[in-house]
Image (cartoon, rainbow, N blue to C red):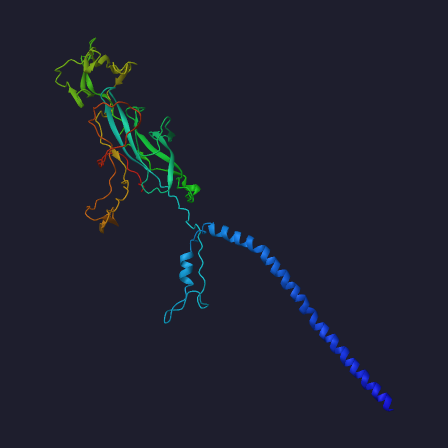
Length: 416
């Protein structure tokens, strides 16, 4: 028994010694490995040190990068405040700011209002010795963001239908001289304006023009008095009817273009013998313009009446004894529309104070220092009725300022 116990104690000591040797080995192995690693790291650092120094020298020689646009603002926001100062902008209580840009300019709405025929003026051409009508038209001053493509002028004779005037070209205010007229007739005029959206600067939206507003018709202006004659004869009766050379008793009225006036000749006292071959009127190629071709008192004759030759026009005119007098040769004042064309409002003066003034029955604004006045229609440059013009038809220059007299003519509904 005693021997077995001794053996058991020896085995325990041996096991403890073996365990101690094994533990020392486990602890010593990492220490040996770390020593080798430190040697290897030192070798690598020695080899890389020259290359690192070279790269650092290159970096020092390169220029500094540009400062960002918002660098100063960011530096101010992130600057640490001193004691007693407000909280910095970067603390969590402040929300971050953002900047967003976009184009939200709305497209303008184009406005196209009807224009108007302002006046019809009778003019006697002293060179051609015939009358013509001068028609003045204006487009509306209320138009916005549009361009007028064309104006279409229309004309009617008497109670007929309106027809387009061929050869008329205009895109703005116009003065048209119409020589295609006949004495004794009434004439009316109107026009249609066709528009498109106006041009805008690059990058801006194009104006919006409603399809129904692309074409606008003006008012209609019609002459009340007919185009006057150059000659009229009032036959009161005949003298010496049974002879071969009967005489005219009555009045001869004609327009003298050289004198720019109406001439009235009467022979009730028979101071002159108005018979075949009698001449009168202004000079035409060395001879008087008019001459009596024949006088036939017999009513049943196909040549009945007083036949007068117009040497200028190259035609014969027959006048008979009638209860109603023939049309007049008198000129008439310009026919103006019943409305007044609105003028564009004046630009306010810099630094001036604005006041109010009544304009056309309505209250509006006007620059200080300017008197209030009703807008007036511009009247065409008026010449004496006998003055000559360079042409008798076509579009002429814009009329001068002024307000034509309102007399004669059929007035129509107005426009603005």
